Length: 281
Image (tube, rainbow, N blue to C red; front, side, top):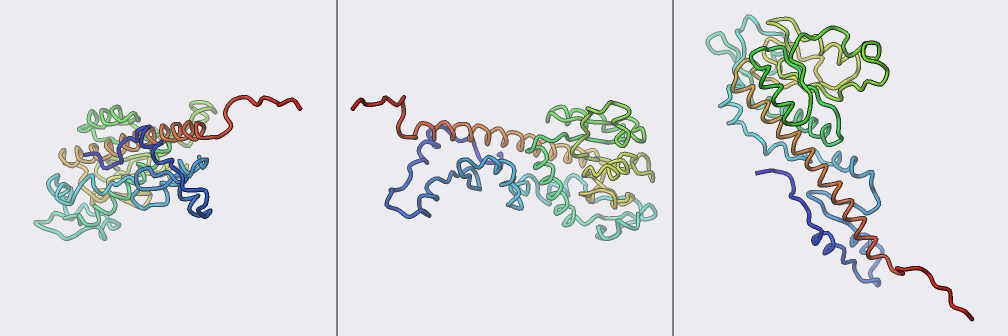
């Protein structure tokens, strides 16, 4: 059920290279040299489109097909904290209050989660470093396993302040900082925000974070309004992020293989093969 295009065979690539007649116009010749891959077109020789073309579509990786509103409801993503713990910046994301418990608007959660997954897919597609962060001991093993399965990193222990801002001093000048931080829990305790959110904002590192009704979403680049205490909700978050990262990496490999086969096929079609032998008068 992978929503991404399947692998392209060498036969399909060679079959698509039947260019139109030479009598056609230049426009027709240009269209004849186009290569289809998934939902977009690649022009031969335009290697920069390997990175730029995915940015031309709002949902290039089809993350909308990974989950539905019913999945969020069944995972209890809509359940927030008590009304007395509500953060004032989370009020726009609250649908209502029932039995003194805030209810999160799942329509907004769907939109924000799709944006976050799409951005995460683009980072993974460009071979960026993704770091999963959480201080909730209950989900440490789940988060570390998720990061390991998708080939990324996790930090579920105490975060020392300045770990990102003082990285050249602590680890040396050759250290590479993460390209994206994913906060599956944006708090250290009930009311204290995670220190890494502030450090990432200082270093201009984009962040994705699940924010409950008692969290401050201001410094998070892509906040996801949702429950961060329920085990079913946390399993759903980890599953979605893992699927997104793995599919994006696999799709990058498909694109690289496609470019390699395409360049070989174009080399076979070039006329005048073999060494040039001069003719004596």
